[in-house]
Length: 259
Image 1: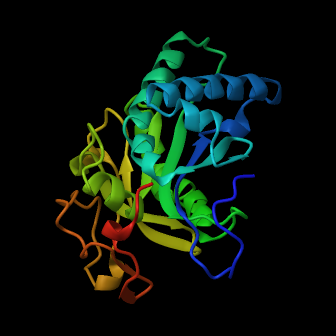
Image 2 (image 1 turned 180 degrees about the vertical axis):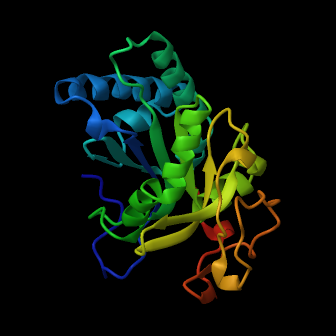
């Protein structure tokens, strides 16, 4: 087990980590006898994509790994978070597209939903950051994005938490992706979870992705259809979060130490 903090008061804030989760679309309807091979194909492509993205060591030796049956959860050093967004999403998309061109008609295509979040992760690996990570990837925003991916011949749908977007994309740490490559929306899981999020599908114009009002507590009028993708400056001040009608500065992205 990777111990990140010395024993102390459990209320102490643990080290921030880059959190990654991936789920396969439609894995539950794959024939049972094909499931092992289906996952092995994806795992092989993930191994290659992580290596291509400069994350070979982190793939082999993550701070935390948890298989989920149809995917996996990883925790990596925060300094490596940017690579989970760019170039990993694009690299995995290319590998999955190649797999799709070569697969037999009897073999189901592989498409994935991915989510990246950042947050304080205790040694127990339990708590809100992991829970929220899994909610992002299971949200309507993620499911809508992977449906658009299928319609447009793409294979990856990426959802970033607002916190991850701020410290990775808005801060200019990505090499190729920019804010305009993402669609600002709200990730909702029934009535249990609703948070601002940013979605991206490789090779698909962000304007084609579905979106809903990410800040309904501000009193904006309901919209019919997708919202326009905002310029990066159209947002609350850095670190400001407005959820469930509560407004406060609970995080300053510039205060997060990248280590």
